[in-house]
Amino acid sequence: MSRFAVDLSLQEIYAMEDKECLQFLIQIRWGSAETSRCPHCGSISNHYFRPLERRWKCRACDRAFSVTSDTVFAARKLKLQDIVAGSLLWINSAAGQPALELKRHFDKTYNTAFTLQHKMREALVRGYNVGLLSGDIEMDGAHASGKDSVARRGRPQVSKPDTKDTPVEELQAQIEEASLTGVAQQKRRNQRRKNAAKNPNAPRDPVFGTQFPADRRQFITVRKRSGVRGYGAVVSKVAIARAEDAKSLTAVISDFIAKGESFLNTDGFGPYDKLGDDFLEHRQANHSEALVGPNGENNNLAEELNFRMDRAEQGVYLNLEPKYLLDYAVETAFRADTRRMPNGSQLQIALHLALNVGLSRYWRGFTHGRHRKEELTHPHPAPARASGPAKGRNPRSPSSGRPPR
Ligand SMILES: [Zn+2]
Image 1 (cartoon, rainbow, N blue to C red):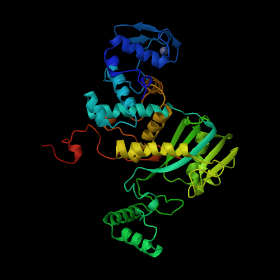
Image 2: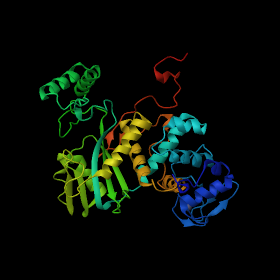
Image 3: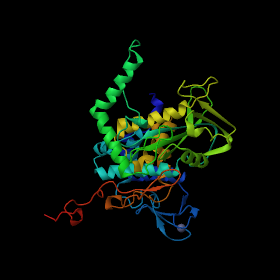
Image 4: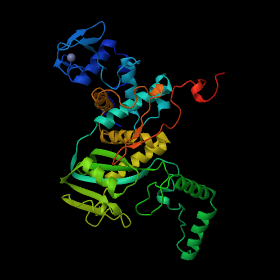
């Protein structure tokens, strides 16, 4: 809320001359105004700058490169100012930003806004917090994506009657009735049955045994406590799994945490029971009794990130496709970790990664139908189909199945 939270505005970006904007990005990419790194041969030097082309010629290999060569923005069509402004607008939205919103602010096409945002997310997925965590670590899982999000865990969702005098039998009957006659409940059950028939090998809830819908995923959070009271977590990492079971959790732990140097804090959810053995200590809070155990055991910071993810999914993005869930989850983790920074610093971190993780693996050629073929889940990526026609296709072209009119 303070003035400190805002140190870069849209006006400042559009007031930049082309040269100033270039200088801004050079500083963010290489951390220096004079020295750059040739993306072709890797030599670091004060390469020859050609001011008219706004490109460098490498002193070692003679090849030319620009500030966006070998970055997620390579072969860009947008002006540099537009890239910086679009990224800032995306950063400024506190809980996430739909592509339609950016398109409206930005006066570009939907595809341009969508691809720009996703390139920024890709930079975070591939570059942000990629090392191992150690210290006081919290871990938790939550359901994400998929239809039927209210009926999480397969339990009938019935509002609790609030009278204390109603006999137990009558309450039971009420619950039965609500779960049998509700049209929504009926629909849910049918949907679940259909999903089960379609996909007999779909993962099951490790505790309740119910089969998950095909598009349900688990969002697994790992957070490091700051150790300062009231300051919350300092580093967050997230993973997506088909089920919060021992196999996925073991993979997440070995990818994310230096076990021998860490304390593990989780809830009492079954699959965690045997995972704490290699840690210095495993503290579990039994959530069926209280949020905090008798000796202060809790994983409330991990829960907090789950709530952030829920709010982004239900309040901003509305419908997250499982294939891109990790991208949105990492975005949410980034927003949580940088929550105390002014927006200019947040932008610099995100742009630094976008300019240093190399070419875009997932979004180059997206508008020409080149879509990601995998879903980034733990323990290993899963193949994923495109969920719709290629964005940007001509609906009248023969490939749409209809003859051209
Ligand atoms: Zn070179």
